[in-house]
Length: 130
Image (cartoon, rainbow, N blue to C red; front, side, top):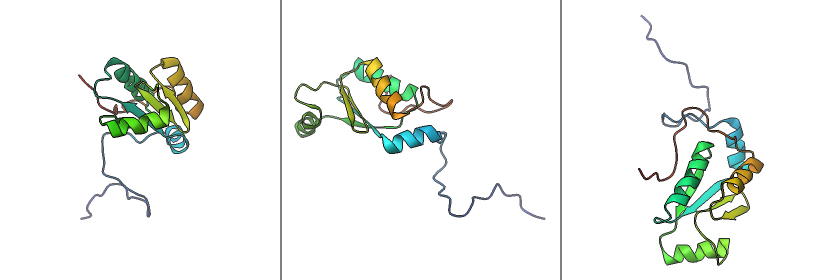
């Protein structure tokens, strides 16, 4: 008899290792391609960093987190964000914002075209401290 097989992968499609994470929506992929998000934190940043992550994850925004742990990294951070920079800080494309201000962070994400809410079942990113 014939062996049953699943749906064929179309030729030339890139199949990554299957994971529980749903693929980001078209809107998210477009926004992330044009305006990638970088999130800057420190290990002792505490609540503000946690709240910032909650906003990013709540909207399903893919982001790269940079934890600033060395003097060298901090110097680079200051060069990028200014001498009085505080944590957390975010970069959305070329726009930067220092300190956690939910309205400002959401405005930046809105302007970049990120959806207001994460797709159902998306898995949070970043370091979560329980």
